[in-house]
Length: 231
Image (tube, rainbow, N blue to C red; front, side, top):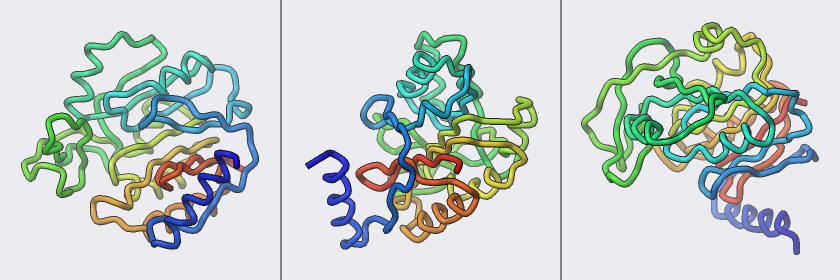
């Protein structure tokens, strides 16, 4: 039995238990998984041009996927994260010039927004949304809308957009899909298990992305990380 068959059976069991949505990959592309376990994403390298442009929203303390994209495909990675621990950690790392860091997050509009830090000091990722695993006390961090970001960076095309922003993906997805910019591959971690979001929110989000002209290249074993590719 192949790994794909095992993953499909596992997801079917989760669907029966109401823990996953009934959707599967529908694009037979040359997908390849890059990055460490826990920070791994699937892309189709055959669809990448020379010197691809990559947006990476939410980086935490693991940029293994970003570095592999730079190493393997000579990407320019534009990485965005306002989390204090992420920014402190990055200051201790030796990162290539092709990794461009922006110390603000992705939001629905420009400005400062409340940001909740994790209760566990060993955890890194905070969120603009409240959750039982986050502190009630909050800090203020800068965010910018997707339209502002692409306008300031003067990009008309993004080859790969990766987004792991702790529940805020449901809020910003519409802005991304209607922006006047071509995005060839979209990678998202959905957080329907947290922040008051449920499977129906992810089901609706996947439906929107498919209606915008994308097929599903890959879905992780737990049904949380999705890779979409433009048809």
